[in-house]
Every structure is written in structure tokens, then in C-alpha cells.
Amino acid sequence: MLNDTNKICQVWNQKDALEQTLLAGLHGGPEIKKEEKQAYLGVFREQVIAFLTQDQVKEAALYPEIAEALEHEKFQKLIINSSLAAYYTNKYQTLAREKNKAYTMVADADCARAAGLVVAGSEAVDLQDIAVDDRRLRLQKLGVSEKLIASAGKKICETCLNSILSLDPREAINYSGLTWLDRLTGERCPAHQD
Ligand SMILES: [Zn+2]
Image (cartoon, rainbow, N blue to C red; front, side, top):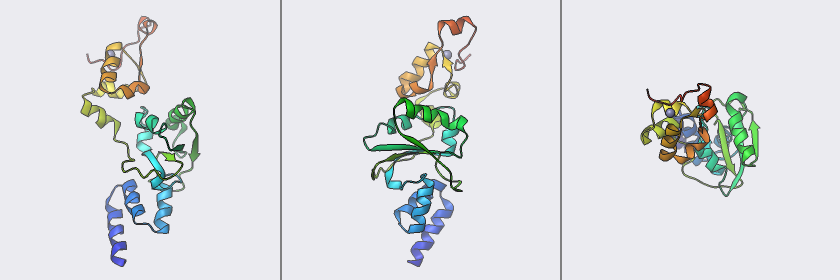
């Protein structure tokens, strides 16, 4: 038993924060369960459908994986870490409202390694994969240009819009097209390679 505990603590010191909590959660223990709940903003790991790190929430782009998770059959609520500035979290509150899904804001409870947001189920969903891949890496792998990745939230030209939507249609939530009027007023496509 002592050996087991040591083993957990060693892993704890080495691995990435949320992953550590996940590993510890698998081994049980009330203290560990408490930390697990802090990391996942008040729910147990087995209830989590998907989560974003604080850094991921701070990105300008919305993660389409979260939009999908809100549609999960066991969806109960979106939990947002309220220690993050509203500037970062507003887009997810808006997303939840648009989809008519419940969301709550939860204070960080002095856990610096808590998730940025958690999509929770009403019961245990026991999903293996609840972490969301880094958006930039995901799009780079698909061959999306750096400029186009970084233009999330902005208006882009039809060519660039068609380009990203053909590579990943879910990214439609992050871009809109320049209108005729925008062009007339001199607005240029920020994603265009010169
Ligand atoms: Zn363009």
C-alpha cells in the first residue's frame, strides 16, 4: 500500500497537472477524489464529456469540440472557470445560450491547475478521451496556413473561407466572410498569403 502511494506521488510530480489528477482519480482515495473534483470544476472525472485547459479557453478561437460536446446525449451542464477573465469566457457563454444549454460559473478554488471549462454529463459517461487536442496543431496537420489559423474570429475572403471549411467544416464557428460592403470600405482578408 505504501509502495502504491509512493508510486502515485512520483507520477504526480512528473506528469502534466490534469493528467496527474486523472491518474490519481483512477486509484481512488478521498483526498485524491477531492482534488479531482477541483480539477474538473466540481464534478468527478467519470462525468466529464470534454474539458479545455485554461490556456485553450484564452485562445481567440472557439473549440468546435466543445460545441459538439454540448450536444452529447448525456450532457448536463457547461462549467466555466470564473477565475478567467470574462473577455475569454464570454464566447463559450454565448455558445451555450445559442444552443439553449445550461452553464454555470465556478470559482477556481485555489487550484491553479483546474480546467478552464468542463462539459459535464448528468451521470458517469466514462469516456476515455476527454482532453481536447490543441487547435493550432490540429489545423497545422490538416495543412491550414498559420495566418488562417490566427485569423479566427475575423472576417476572411471567400477563397480562405472555402479553404478552411473544406479542411475542417466544424471551423465554421470561427470565421465569417467579408461582405461586398466590407470590401468597399477597404477591409482586407487578414488570412491571405501575399
Ligand atoms: Zn483570404
